[in-house]
Amino acid sequence: MKLFGEWKIKRECLKNGRKKEYDEYKKVKEAIIKEKQIHEECLKRAEERFEKIKKVYGPSSREYIKASEDVNRWHYCIAKDKLELEFMRPNTLEDIEYRKQIIDRFRDEIGKILSGDNSVRFHGTSIYFAREILKEGEVSSTKVRFDGYDNSISNEDEFCVTTADKIEQTLSFFSDFYAFSNCLPAGCVFVLRATSEDEELAKYAVMKSFKFREHPERILGICTTPENVFKVKKWLKQYGYDEGLVYDYDQFLDVAPSLKSKDIVSIPEKSDRDTVVSSEDVSALGNVDLFDELVDTFEDPNIVESFENDNEGKRKSM
Image (cartoon, rainbow, N blue to C red):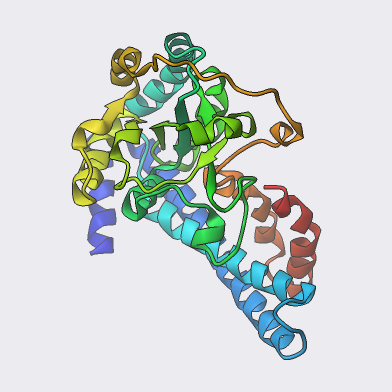
């Protein structure tokens, strides 16, 4: 079936004069497959180290915890690789042009429409994690989903968001607008209503996690590119939500004025925690590039292990 799918993609591209786009797609796909193989080898070694450590150290020891985190980290990377491979497709010029022109316009317009209204929060994520969010019925941290592996600055019962005044961060870094470089669709922006409990958290660019199905009124919309609208509507229907929640970015600008709260919530003064760039999943948004160096050093296990150790600090900061 997979071979038939690949043949169909190639046939459609060649038929429509998109050989260049198909060639780019194949090149990127091969690179991700290779990266996945590297991650699988790293996972194998991490699991072997963990088995040895379990025989010597207890569960509360630093050695045990670090080895466990290493195993879960590679599980996370492999899960991400699989999702990217599932969602990859050849680019289209129309999609790329829409993504390039809408990001600045949407940022400017939504900032004007919802200026000062901090009850409306925005959470950006990749297209594949958008599906997982809808499937699970909430935005949960990697710590919850990957047995304690944590690559987010938010606490376990929180997730990262921005307000309309600071939406540049969501759009530029966490919504996969530029993922066409990896032949991936753009991501989604979940538009959510904050509660009074979230007021203090606004200065930390986070809000409390909540069950979508228990509070459907707090889901104000899901913004995405025209390419994804039908797909996301299908997921909403599949997982029991209102299909009418999906908008492309132009459509959402039309409905945004009706979402403005009558009670404007002010954000408390900044704290030291504000200096950390927020993200529900930093690596899910293209920052797994730190593993690219492994491609050239893969044959030497000692170099790979050294690379892992050298980058431990970097991963912790994500």
